[in-house]
Image: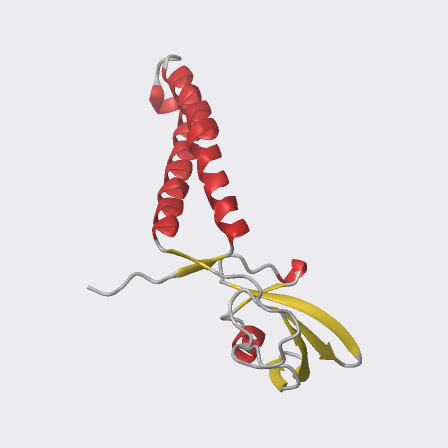
Length: 159
């Protein structure tokens, strides 16, 4: 049997998943169960659209709870950041990396794929940029193939 794939999350990401699971199990599922019960009491289930919709929503919620349970079993917490100002520090999961790109500086946090959110400067360690950055140190240059062509990044700081 193969080892289950590790799901890398920060403490905040883990808290969000637990919060979502709690809301689904303690709030949403009981609400939908009540809807199913009320719709069932209306009689003929074969032509009861409310019953069908409530059952479908319940099925979706149960599936998501099951998915969250599986994710939570596979979580490996990321140690965020490190010793500031250490030029020898390499980029790893949880690092915040400041990059120099075309005359501008931009900072990204390297996270697991479940937490990736490029709009909020969180990039997956599995993304092209994330893969290229892993193990790099301050001063190193990284070239990444993008749809618009190759982009050259310089690692300015690793936290």
